[in-house]
Image (cartoon, rainbow, N blue to C red; front, side, top):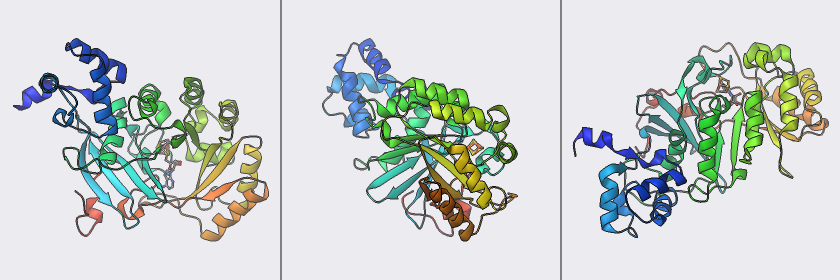
Length: 366
Ligand code: SAH
Ligand code: SF4
């Protein structure tokens, strides 16, 4: 097969279950073949038609003449001392994105990207510093899950892979600035015909794009919502997150209170702690007041320092005092230490560059 012929083939990963059915029917195959193909790709992790043993040889040949299964290309896989894995992908136009796999007792959480870069330019965030490159398409978002689930480079053929139990959309980009593609990707992740994940195991994190929060609520997708509040007042938030000028805290809090939460569900409030900026006891008191009446839990994330940033990480005592203050106001508040710091996989460290130079030797698995 020459390159040109390969390029002309359609990538089945680009299509939702219904579109796939039309393609299959268009080829003169029985419609139920589409469900079989979906099962092979999304449950079994197949990346070639030859693996699809319950589909007739004639049909498999017909499919491989016009189509292929082409996940984003995995350029690099780095494994941290704490078991976290960072995956660097190259998309068809050369854009780079990253996802991070975090094993934890009984869970395997994948942190995925929704954009190459980010337009919102939060002052403390390395992804934001590079600006926006482009939105990811639905299959470029779900493709990160396929590759991580396969546990091997995209073109490998080994085994059935591993089960991703949870997804957090907290990688590169602002998902609600790419809402159309992100909602389509989420739909595929929860579709019983495709990834078949529970929406309760999926969390979308936003910097506070108010119309997007409303649209997510109305979409009925039922995924969890996390919001990077990061500041107790407009004054501080304006300084660290330019999006606050467009959607100030009052509008954000209203959108969060209006968000349709399932019973016993809570919104996750993320709060990056920056030394001297938002980490004082009076900030905790202000935050408690701001969140009053919102069904939420708070994740305190001590800032991960990175070169060139004007911000510092608060000392442990301030972080604990902040948490205590929130507890005393009856909030649930956790301190979240980022994982994978040694491979630049921690919150706010994703920027789509090779991090290999930070390692002294090649990691296993690539
Ligand atoms: N754009 C979305 C999704 C990305 S999530 C959002 O901002 O919510 C990235 C999370 O990491 C956000 O909560 C952000 O506030 C946090 N973050 C960014 N840079 C960080 C850093 N250097 N240290 C700790 N957390 C950081
Ligand atoms: Fe974008 Fe989120 Fe980083 Fe802000 S924190 S620049 S919204 S990725």
